[in-house]
Image 1 (cartoon, rainbow, N blue to C red):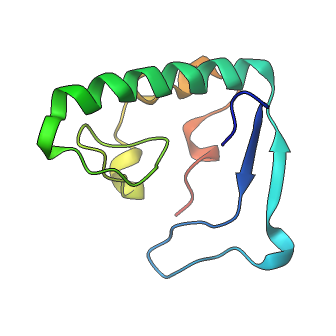
Image 2 (cartoon, rainbow, N blue to C red; image 1 turned 180 degrees about the vertical axis):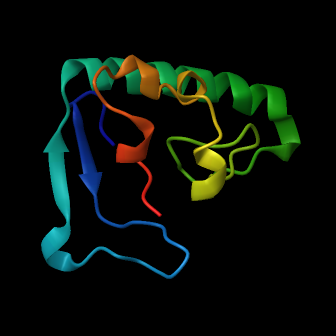
Amino acid sequence: MDLEAGTISVWRSIRAHGDTKTNRSRRTLKLPEIAVDALQGQRERQARERVEARELWHEYGLVFTTSVGTGYESHNLRRVNSSATGLSAISGLSLHQYVSS
């Protein structure tokens, strides 16, 4: 993710049964300004969580994480209030568009 350029590169997908991206499906996408703003807010929230978690934090380079930096399992992400992850700031998009079973 390059917020200065307003782009996101989708090169792989973390799934329970392995990577689902092929070489042909890899993309770099231009983000709408509202998405860039929401992701910048998420980055700031995550920085605060990193400080609060101290030595418990695990750095994996993920955008949306638990309070200790680990990735969400799809069933747990569905339970998270969308405002806590910053998704609510992106109008018109629902949580199910980010998580598939």
